[in-house]
Image (tube, rainbow over all chains, first blue to last red; front, side, top):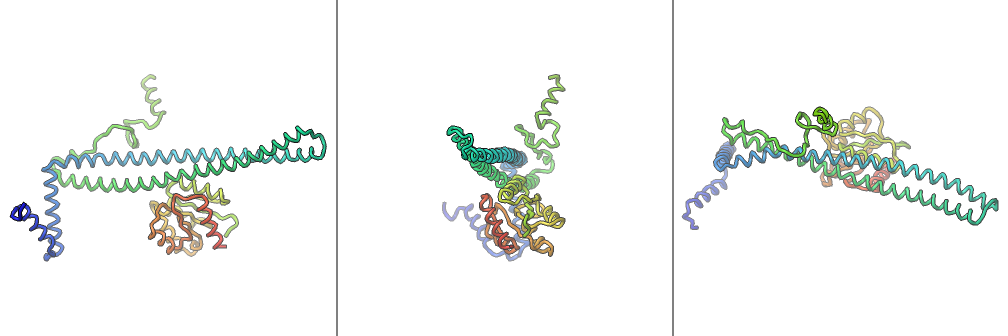
Length: 229
Length: 127
């Protein structure tokens, strides 16, 4: 391609003009940006790119709902784990306290028998082994508590992933608004009514305000009951 | 510092509030209340006595920096130590927290040992 190519010359000429300082000031720059935007809008419409734009815009609310659903469900899962950890801690604490109490009592018995009263070798050995076992129970309860703390700490994933999801949601909302604005600007007024979000099929992640879905098993059972099941 | 210091845990995620509360209990501080954002926390701080605040930074309504700023500007609250606990590891944020009067800064995810170390360090400095 030589320098005589009119297209190339045209581009070069525009680039040269853009590189020059705007002698007319800010108004000229705004006018030129406006022209470029209008040209872009016209090109999008003529090339049929308004449809992919509309699809992208239509899918964003669904994507946002799904992300919010993930945040909610993972949050509920983390809470369930924390509840289970609390319950397990209580069980471990009771076990530990009981073991300590029994060990103390068996040591008293051990002291009594070591004084030569009612002590057979087998009985003394049984007392010692029982005391050791209760000590081990207490130690193991401590180790289990450490593991439970690790399990509890691992639930911080909900906070960390939740913050990321929240930012993505904000970004998706902003993108959706910009796409909608662009779509409205590129769509002839008489066709703007067709810019409606579609009803997508799939798991219901945002049931609020919808009468066409049930949100839990009770809803399913109630519906089935009305149908005679 | 009070023998049984009263903590205020501020975080918009209930999971994290619960984790911090349980950890504080494990390290010997069972006296704790929770707030879901800075605005709620500020009202709680003004309504009753607290000895220590463990606060997230990114929260709706009022973030941790704004809470810190408001508390430090209030004569009755400015002596309460603030430990900032956040997923943000940006240097600017750490500097802003320090300049705003925070006593410590922990980046999530953190360990029980880290929380204990920071809390004890602040307690020791104040006593």
